[in-house]
Length: 196
Image 1 (cartoon, one colour):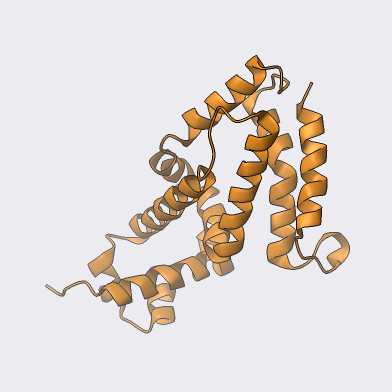
Image 2 (spheres, rainbow, N blue to C red; image 1 turned 135 degrees about the horizontal axis):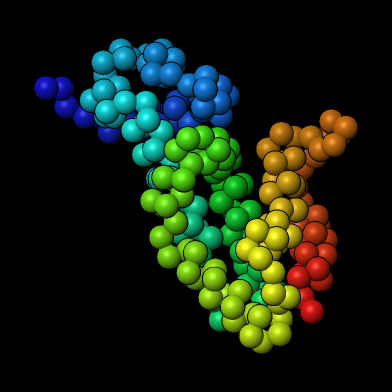
């Protein structure tokens, strides 16, 4: 049996991420991946059982890194505005330093493997964020909302701007680059909307 090669495995993961972002879940195949890596399809099966195993593994790996980054310097006992700012900073940092991975994770999250990947990578993130919101509500710093409404208001503006940044253009194909000024402007409005 052939042995695993760490450099080749990293190449496979990088090319898989690029293909998933560029071709989408439906356009991704092991044959395309093998061609992109300059290796035989059989070599891929040294590392992964099949296409689904590969995609799940990549998704979980990215997800764990994202959720770990999101919790850096964050404490669920922080005042609401400070904690939300830390969340934005952490999410921006992950996105800016890992644009390919962030885009790939979005593709995988909206694939048939999305729920599996989220469950396997979420860890303690959900309970930490739940405690943060609970604490903020108890202190009168946050309006009680359903989780989906809270998330949409708290993070929707950020993720839209990060998407514009990734694409390099906003509405009407106007050139776009995300700035600290935009972050601060949007965050002020979001905090105002979420606080009593």
